[in-house]
Image 1 (cartoon, rainbow, N blue to C red):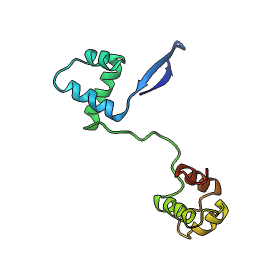
Image 2: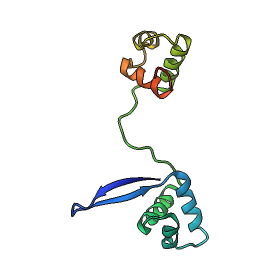
Image 3: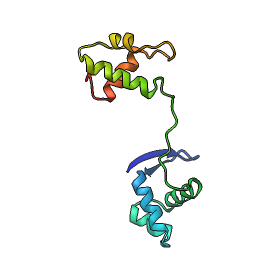
Image 4: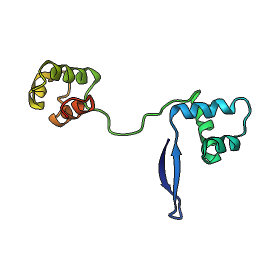
Length: 127
């Protein structure tokens, strides 16, 4: 569990816990036999409004799912990421510029050298 802050209209900061998918599933499972949301709130150490929100979202979504957070879309496809990693594993001393030249294809968008370095860093390569 982590915490997220939000502000009310009066400028007060409210800290809410954000739950993992497993915890949300256990809240839904605990509610199925008939446990009251206030009891679940004391068990999980959060407010009853958060429990009600989790139960409402479960009802809307037909199951507990991890919603992808909004953000800028990725510039590279999975196949391009795989090619970047493959090029690095073939020759670990290759620079991002060399990898940039080797993975470019005419039908796909060309990733920047910084993007290539980011993909390698996420994979645990090149520091």
